[in-house]
Image (spheres, rainbow, N blue to C red):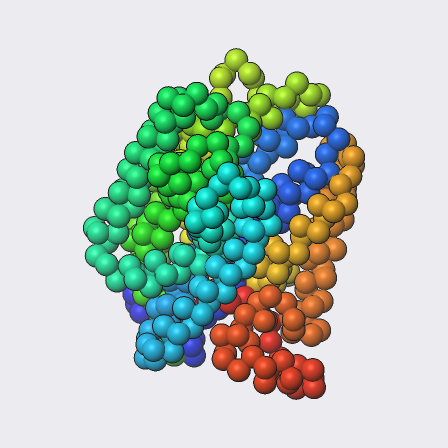
Length: 434
């Protein structure tokens, strides 16, 4: 009978499409960052358009969604293994690693503000520790996942709604304070030295718009993914047994309906064209008067559901990425067959953290490239990067990658494993999120 159709497995599978999605996200993030460093000024508008409309939903939003899904799946699998204490230690250590790496990146990116004597030391320290780049966000998200993943779905939804409400409350208070003090918050990058107050500190810590993944409202994704995918994760995390495809298919259909409704809700909430609640520089890039301008300045802005620091964007991006994830997991992981391109990009994605921290070296070699020249350069760099990662994985098992180093740290005996590597006796590599 159809209900008895199963996919035989000896252990919970590694879901290749999760790595594929991470690979896609990193390829798009690579495009955005190289386009930032390698443009000649003639295609500022098209770069802003591509970033806002395509790269963001399938780049950072995709990466965060897949990472949260991977953490939840990993937690479910490891909990079923029965060693709760070992899982707790692993989660804490991994979170601390991500927070440490994120803090180093913040120290570099925020150096001008952190060492500004006009900014109180305590505020600078909090900004370094809590301003959410990708690593900091993932470190905090893991802690939230561990504490909150067993909550009732209704409570998860309520928590997500309260995070959205916090966004609007803090934002309204902050903009009102800026207006009262005569601080122009609409153009350029604001810094804490311009307005030092409890409300300003909340804004810069929780929802700084220049952050790739501002804590508020992004952290709501932890509760949304958990509430929506809870049953499916349980179905996919069954160890040493079998996955019932018909039940999985039915649950995926339910999630697809919910995801579609969330996308529509996000669009409706954020349909108003606005150059942004705080920083309008991105809108000025979008309507830059260059040869490739594709956005009409008379529109007065771009939809808020495409602006990252906004609840409508969280709902919109969750929905479209969720639909892609459902389809890909069904085709790639639950009906496996050899797909060379998927394998290639999935390998790249399994080393996403390594790529993320190393690709910025390109900023040291800015190029004055027109759009067509840039696309050719980008294609060459991306293929070289993916080919290098593939060779690294297949030939030396990812040794000395960031993922490999984190695995050694999580395993406990770092010194011993480094010695084993030097003696050529140890294999490693691969992603660490699930």
